[in-house]
Amino acid sequence: MKPSPIIIGSERSEAGLFEGAKLLATGASALDAVEVALRLCEDNRKDHYVGTGGLLNARGEVELDASIMVGSSRAFGAVGAVKGFAHPISIARAVLERLTQHCLLVGEGAELFADEGGFERRDLVTDESWRLFREALASSSESVEGEGTPALPGDDAYRRSALALVNRFRPHDGPWGTINVLALDEQGELVVGVSTSGYPWKYPGRVGDSALPGAGNYADARFGGAACTGRGELSMRLTGARVVVDNLARGDDPNEACRSMLSQALELTDDYRSELRTICLTPDGRHGAAAGRAGSTYNVISAGVGELVVRPRVWP
Ligand code: GLY
Image (cartoon, rainbow, N blue to C red; front, side, top):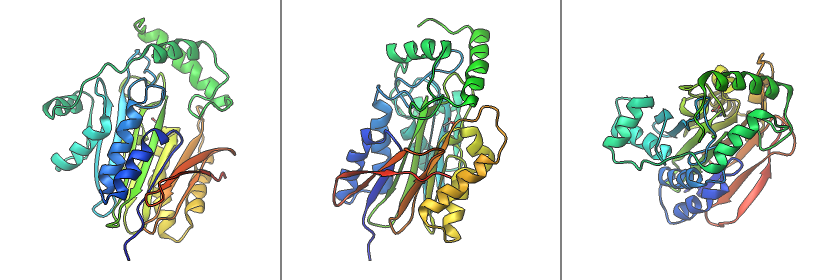
């Protein structure tokens, strides 16, 4: 029996999820649906965690990470620390499809590849992202990465060290986050995509979990796909997405697979601790998600129905 196509995403994925669902409903591939959904999120200037308007690194530049992974082949394409391009998810897909000898390009090499492929260049700094950069570093009661939720003690430590970096790099006068999208198409293909401007005020060249297979993104069509948002360094140290998929493989239900990974994250020492979140989708269309605290959500659209359902994430 053919699976029912479905697309799910992290908070703020609604900017692109409807278009992805519409495509899936017409029989399009999960790869196309995930790419289209994330491109729209990357274009959303009101979202300061991704693409145009994403928050800046310590030198005042927007550096983007993105990846896409195909569950049946476990083919992976990614870019890291890319500057000046509108749609890193499409460059990541091109790495997957056209540069099959490699999985990940970073910095200048990724930009060379994107220019060769004719991808759209764009100034990614907006007036608003620049203002947020200046204001947030001065003081803020909001979490460094975490949907505007109250700051945790680790956020202050992060902010202080970021401020020291910014002062060192003397940013020019003139600007956080991650989106996960996971889709299952009618052929049974499972695809996971991730796109982000990464941690705000990060050290230039810092690449986060979003570009790394097993950390921020993992898909295995036998068991499921998973992706992470939040404190990427925790996800990298744990290989968070891979752990969630391994939990699915051992028979955990989707919420438990996510919750169990976050419990492991809580055991790691991290002076800059802020939240890690995760989301997963199985080959038979079940899904789940977890966050470090209560009240967080994720988005689901069953392509045949077309309505967005906001679901609660479980927490450890
Ligand atoms: N999870 C996004 C990042 O750490 O860059």
